[in-house]
Length: 67
Image 1 (cartoon, rainbow, N blue to C red):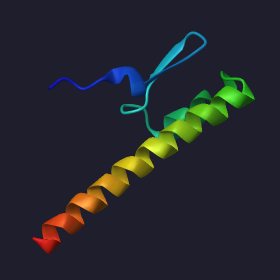
Image 2 (cartoon, rainbow, N blue to C red):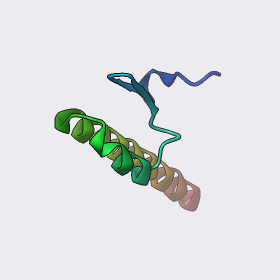
Image 3 (cartoon, one colour):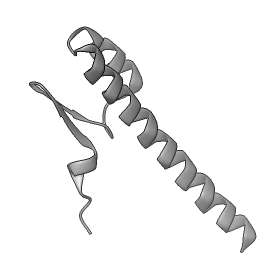
Image 4 (cartoon, rainbow, N blue to C red):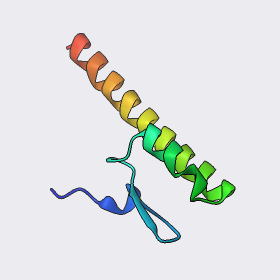
């Protein structure tokens, strides 16, 4: 099954940012190119995505321990 890239691709102005491929340190380097609100939005989306991934891994890990 193909993964839908619509939630991982963020378009800000002339930039297309793939949240799965970009690291947090790269986002910090782009700070001077983005308006303040869009930079905060991008940073928040990356953090939320990482949180969801960690939570999913923790959940799958705990299910393996129960079985």
